[in-house]
Length: 141
Image 1 (spheres, rainbow, N blue to C red):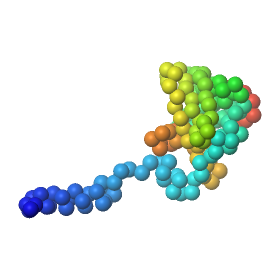
Image 2: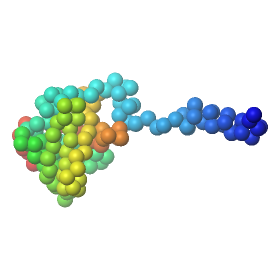
Image 3: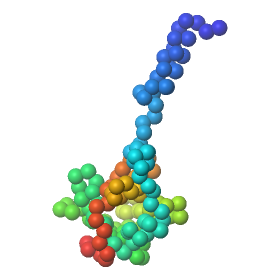
Image 4: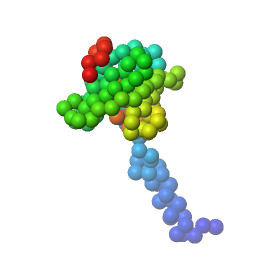
């Protein structure tokens, strides 16, 4: 038989588990999908990125990324001193994976969602990492 203290502890735990405070935080990606965002397919990603220079925003910083037809990725911070190269690939499960110098050979895979014409990249934890703003055919680095 449960004592008074044990029973009240279980009730408090049950109440917290059922409340928003006790629930796991919803990710930005989950929120976007609930708002009607659609995940881009591998073919759509290829059409959008391959052979193009993409202007992207992360916070208040803007970047240029060139997705070469040879799977070489080049990037630079607009108005800053960061630049790097690496490689990328588009997966059959509708993600784009990339590796630059800081990754030391590891691939980071992201999902691209589109909502109201805005394309955003989400990491494996569901955090929005970049908004893709502009796409230009060719290398405009």
